[in-house]
Image (cartoon, rainbow, N blue to C red; front, side, top):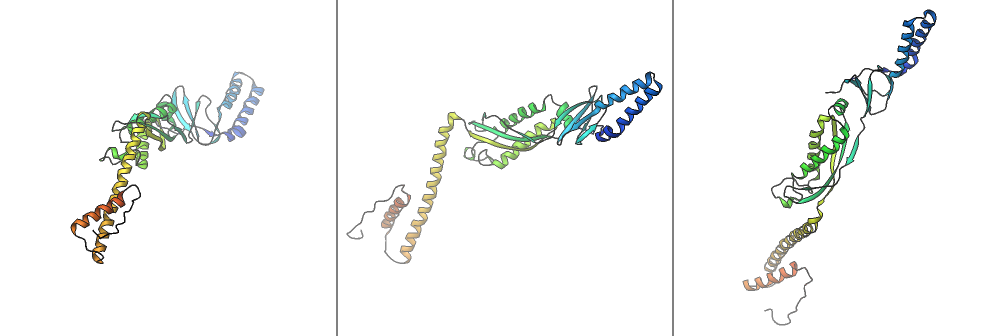
Length: 283
């Protein structure tokens, strides 16, 4: 069921011109001629005053007549419609909510905690009112279901899956786009538009948080050591090349190996080197 324009007219025209004139005319008719017909006309005109209603900005009024949907009015201000229409107010304003922190398993089986902020609004009042029982509850439940499904489709960290192109922690833009699309697919049947969906909380579950922290620290240390060794090898190579180029000292292969060993110890060590001065011969 899609939204359609409901019947209503400007309420100020009805309140200031049409209904007062009709009311006075029927009362005059009743006083002049009497009878049942003028009395019925007076009652009908009086009941027409019940057709006034107010539409606030970013708000819609859904009209139903004896259980049938007859339209929606979005024009703001004082409006008038047929008094028999039942009118239900639906907010069209942008709303947001933050989901609860949920514990799920990523695609590697690691338990994680995740929560997200969803920004949404009603775009089709007919679908929001008639396609689901309670569209606000529907948004909450379906959004949390989409968050769980999305979290279980990606690894928490890219180091967990080298073949994965996207990870929850390292690709926030891609994850937000995927989450928004998945939530939109679920809520479109209820006339809901999702404007934004972003993760507000992401962490390993408490039972594995300490172990994962140690693993991350170990990986960081290994990466740092790799950079240090790479730089040290380049410095040793440069030192040997400079010594040979400028003919400062002639070293055989054994002494070169000994020098390389000493330089690597100095450059790669995590503590300051303690030099030993040789006051004798070169060897």
